[in-house]
Length: 144
Image (cartoon, rainbow, N blue to C red):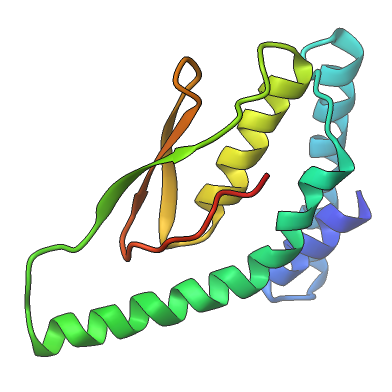
C-alpha cells in the first residue's frame, strides 16, 4: 500500500493535504480490491523470480525509446516520409495453459508494451509467436 501512495504522489507532483488524502483513499481502495479478488479466487497467478529481471531494465528502455522517438519526430519534421512502423513476429515460449503460462503471457505483454516504441498485438500459442508493433524497428529479443 505504501508503494501505491508513493506512486500517487509522484504522479500528482503535489504534497498538499487533499492530494495526500486522495492518494490514501486510492491506495486503500486498490488494496481492498486486490484482497477481495485474492480471497474470492478471482485473482490467481504464479510468477517466477527470473521473470522480474526485465522490470529493472524498463526505466532505461523507456528513456532510450523516448530519445529514439524524439529523434525520429525531428527527422520526420525536416524530411516528411511515410510511417516507418513495422510488425514483427518473435519466437516466444508461451508457457502452456496453467497458471504459470497465463501469468507469463500477461507479464511479458505488460513489460513489452510498457515502453513507448512497441506494443504487443497478440500471442499465437499454437505457433509460439508473439506479434508486436514497433514504431522504430529494433532487433531486441523479448524478455524471457
